[in-house]
Image (cartoon, rainbow, N blue to C red; front, side):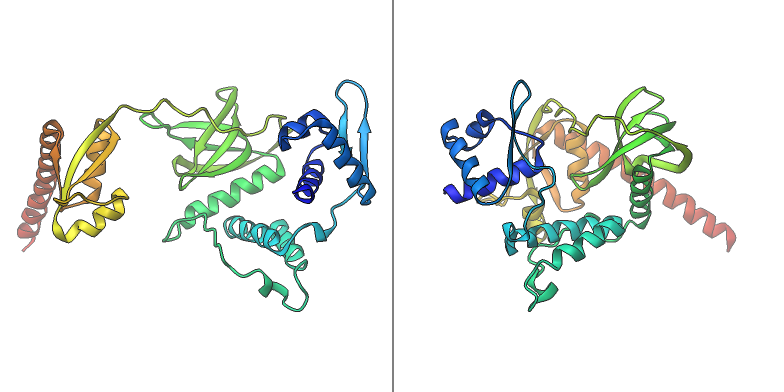
Length: 314
């Protein structure tokens, strides 16, 4: 346990400029006296720990010290390789590719790259490609690296498109979608832009000085009011329903599901397709029937016009 703690302290000090003994004691749930002994042991092992006295002081490693490759095991190196492969597949970045080569070279020479078997594969794009989104990610990543302004037409949900000029800061992949965190010159503040809503992106010639702020996830929105739906799939759609709803049906083949109330719930059921019936609440059953009738009427009208046009051409 002590060896694990010593290694963890070294890793923390490598990533931070300095930490106090009190911070380390809280982190590892030991006394400050134990931390002092640990720091002495690290120094005796040849890893130079430097103490800074006074306010704002603490402990850190000599700035010229670099980590020995033996501090990282093969499993840890493999985890890094898996993560980098996923990012590089999205960005095709030369620097990331070079880092992969260097990390893979730290494996046993007898096995080479085979030492890092693909036990975990990270894919940041969905099945089917989305080549336009892939190109957009690469364009924006390049603009971030070069500190270039970009402009694009952006349509917020339910609003008309606006032309935005932004300082691109960080690309974010979250919940199956790519986002850009940037300083928007139109709004005079930081904003998060969903890439699928960006159109006509243009790379500007003007360069900007990167701001000191770092990306932090937006505050979670308040949980929506939910409604419990009682759903019954047709027998041939039972397996699809189990996959969609992530659970097991009751003894009568029904599913109970909590979903945000309103249009979202109706859209969710319609997205499933034929073979799914709302049993309760009755208001949602009637609302779904009305919506389905509207969809059917719209498509029937189009089909009638198409048939009439074809008949007139004969």
